[in-house]
Image 1 (cartoon, rainbow, N blue to C red):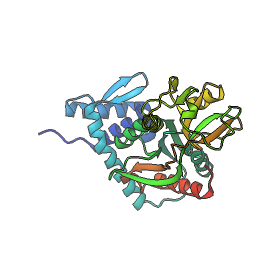
Image 2 (image 1 turned 180 degrees about the vertical axis):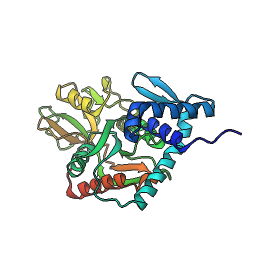
Image 3 (image 1 turned 180 degrees about the horizontal axis):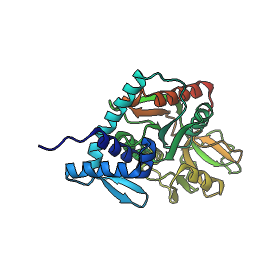
Image 4 (image 1 turned 90 degrees about the horizontal axis):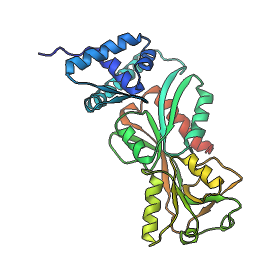
Length: 296
């Protein structure tokens, strides 16, 4: 009969999987890196399989590792909840949040607001396309995501922050910038600028273009929303983006699109069992307050 893995092995593995690094996991656990490495190595021997693959950008979970992490991360969350319930918790002074979003706003104003209130809490923030954001959430590789129209799932807790619609973004000196409304057909002579494959924006825009039986001979697909903004500011064309998804600029104009009047929800989305964690609750509260104060 195989020996049961020790709690130390499970904890070490879970933190390495979260941090994608043995050294960062050791720092989070306040133990030596060799201790973490040994615990994970013992766990791999017990399971008879490799749990991590070393890549240039960090560690990557194998299939077996990903399946194990989906369970151990829930266990670590429950242990943290128990600790918070029985401990005499004072002010929130430190911690670590893994946060992603599919657009710079409203995420960045909320992060700024949160940082002012909790300056010692570390936030790792990265932009991903919509598809990748949902995958990372479902795989429990992040704590919080601020995404547009997240997929409904019993494993996720979703809180709406605002509703927004798509507009045509262009330089303020563009001939169409002074119009109160334009159609997709009005934009056909321009280069269309869209975010990368996997983005909600690209899916919605492609569907609307098909519905109108239109074609755009020139389309530029960029890697991130900031790159879309830079392309627009450099006069490369017109971008289709959700209103207020970029930091306001006097050099940019956003014009309503006649065929794209639907509203979309920007939401804070978290794994449901992490909802009651103190760090997560604190961020959620700040996001809701920011919504009420209309800081984004």
